[in-house]
Image (cartoon, rainbow, N blue to C red; front, side, top):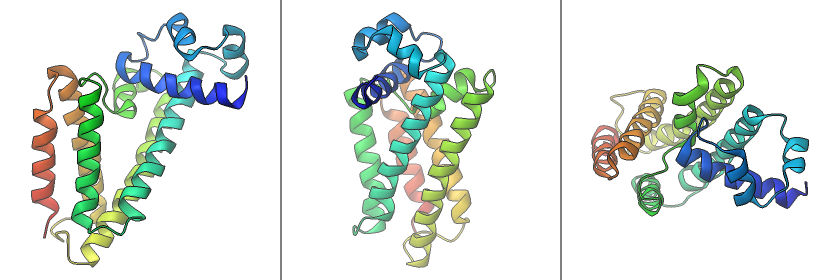
Length: 192
């Protein structure tokens, strides 16, 4: 499988796993959407679980790139940086008609208790993202923008876990009310 096919397989995997989950992932449907032959799939992915783990890792790395660019490498004021995250995420969720959430959280809920591989990759992704948010909140506190009522590390954990709950609820209700409430509540907590 060429590098472009692997990339397409991982991108297609994100789309399908985010919407349908692990147990509803049909290999035939995936292969048709990714436009790759089944022989190539099994050459690069040992199993459905291995495929899901690689997609999850890829998704996590994309998150690292995204969060680093928006939160740490930006010249915007700190409040605008996190506002950008909220706005872009809401648009993405709206574009998917609230059928997608955070794949890390979705797969963690669905199979992390059954798969050590998925559990390890999901935990790794959270730790990487948490480190970025920790640094972001620390810098914001140092610049007097964010409240010092909570440790930056606590704010990072609270943000990511609350975000996951809001996204899960959005998928269940098919609307963005819980995410908007999450956004409002987080901003009240973190602003100085």
